[in-house]
Image (cartoon, rainbow, N blue to C red; front, side, top):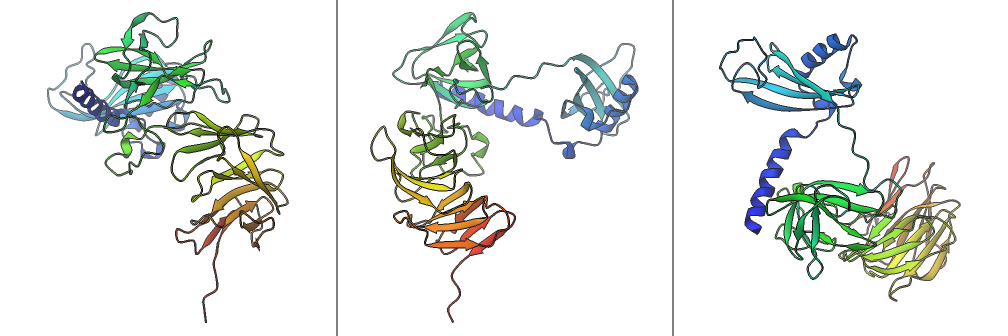
Length: 400
């Protein structure tokens, strides 16, 4: 079964490469012939930027009919290179065929354009589980749980088509789609030839899990290096609101609560909440883990403070220290590679360098004339870089 699913996945990915929309600057020249014909039909000039959407497929057609013969027209049975353009304009989808030399232009047909798919989950609605699957990848029903049902439509009211047993693998075809009443994310899948919609989870509990290249569950912490051979299979592993941070071992994800005044740390593989804190004195603007102490988290607030929090006690986040030195929001944080220094960049244009165990800054660096938006250390820890209206590289003066 796994081999058959792998072959299906490869075929699906190969097909997807051909039909994806391209950016306007990559538009092939023959699209201008289609636009000119469309302009004459609607009675006004239609430019590429006037379209709601567009895409194309380039093919070698078996005849000069370009795959769309018209009644009463004679065509030559010679292989003809050309394009099929789909142009969406004023709620109508136009199917154009244009030869490479633009001498043949055929309007194959028109249909009402499909309504745009609503965002899933809806923006700002935290009642949905953040989706972890992706179209064109493999996933499975979590082992040891209950079977997942297949329905003909995304929603609990859809007709029951069958079940996917616990631990069984399927290919994701479409999605996500959100059912509004029960706040559930649905995916269209192919399970052993049976195609239907299945739910990702509910009430904080995932029922489905994405699989990696070798068919085992993926998590943020997996040591699977990215390469040119596998980046086309990237899938979302965790989806949380910004600001967010990942621990150096990849096992913990820190993110803010909806009100911005709390932090939740979850297990990156299971989504289980490990630690949390609420009612912070300000809104969280920046987060970063100590690369050498995975339970230490630095937090930048909009009131100019930096908090050092400890996550070693399950269920809670304990404040170890509050650092004050900025006259405005702390926009950026970065630990040195050895974890002994912490840099903070503020809306006041100042960079502070701290020891996480000291109450006062070790250094105050001025040189920006606008808010600092990012700070980072070089891989060897010898250079501190701050970015805002410009980038400043801070280092020790050369000896001698």
